[in-house]
Image: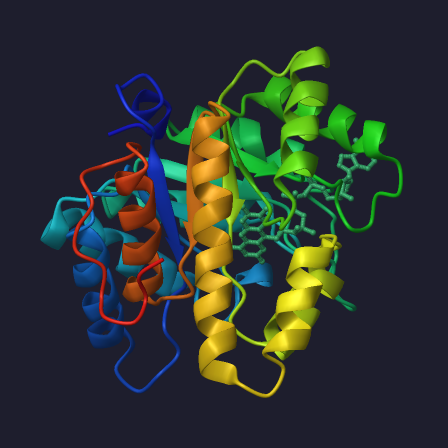
Length: 298
Ligand code: FAD
């Protein structure tokens, strides 16, 4: 199924992101994660891609294929173009097509020292190739602007360029402040963004994780999050539960605001996804809630 169609269906599209496991038996681990997610009826599940094409790029395809073939899920493979050649991208797209993948999130990837941007400078240069190859194409959106773009309005212009290049929907970077995200949607719509934007939410799990994420993506930390981090600084179990509860409240708030969709960064933890689906279900949104795993309920 093309993801653009899930936004036409009734109800709030709730989707998940996973990454290809790096362990000894990556496919076994991935199968276990996907099995947990499949029971939650997601609108689609996306699989991350290693920037620069190294490491786990083949695994992205393997995991997406497994989701399609074994679980009948709608998958989306991420694809980055930093350091890639046009020939290399064509080859990867061919492999994705052969694996039955229909949806691709076209990304530039983070700039890494030593990597070049010869053939593709920005994601907007990759999008037309993916579209021409017959995929349904999504791209990344940044509710607080991209971390390397200091001017918010310029960031919105870059978003518009991706839509003009053929992006059919956007998936947003994580954020902890719904007001920021809703303001961003207003700006995007005023700037002529007409394709659906699904908003990404990641529960915080630990102080180190949230610090890393904030530095990586420039998301602001509202004071309720800072207070929770301070309160549970020395109690990792309670901090995890508070992070899941905060994310669930964010998701319900977004659903109530009438957003196009919500995308949960599951960090390969089905209990996190289950808690999100349960909270949305209890508030009357999203796919039928499956029973949340013990200890992860909101
Ligand atoms: P672009 O849209 O090309 O933007 C990159 C930078 O260039 C931004 O600062 C932008 O403002 C600027 N820019 C864009 N157009 C112009 C222009 N015309 N002129 C001047 N400046 C311009 N990374 C991975 O490695 N693997 C993944 O699987 C992955 N998945 C992601 C999923 C989501 C939903 C999101 C939000 C991000 C993901 N990322 C992933 C991270 C992403 O690769 C980085 O954020 C990267 O730095 C930017 O990617 P982009 O596609 O948004 O790039």
